[in-house]
Length: 164
Image (cartoon, rainbow, N blue to C red; front, side):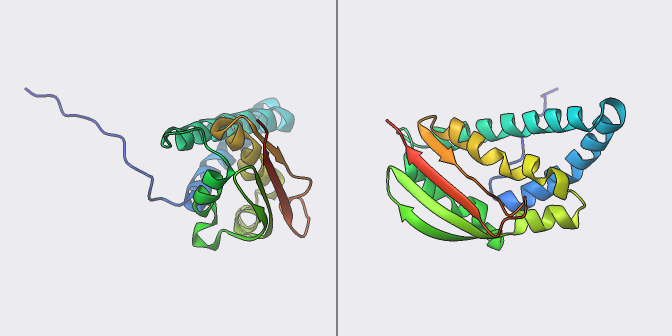
């Protein structure tokens, strides 16, 4: 009797915004269970580490499809993955192979987490992934951000520089 080949579904067509919603529905319950058993601090650490690891792996996977080490022009090419479905409104300030500076002026991720009652951990579910994604994508990218909409600022300031 032949064995049936199992396949993993291709989710590449699912927007990152939709993925974050699905993840948040699950992680909210995981966060609550960890908090009840070990406290909020432990839950934040565990969820934060899991999201960090996921972001690094995502960065590595996105870099692996290129035939070269990605630069910030390549990063600009994949940025629409995060802005799809008007998830982010951005204002590009500088864009080149070695520098990319932009502000996020609207963040539907923050809006979604607030609607879900997850505003307090939204930074773990999305914002903290940004620097970690860059680590996986190209460890020579210096990522800097001093404020986020998620934490109450009017805009998020993304500053990326390729250091070689």
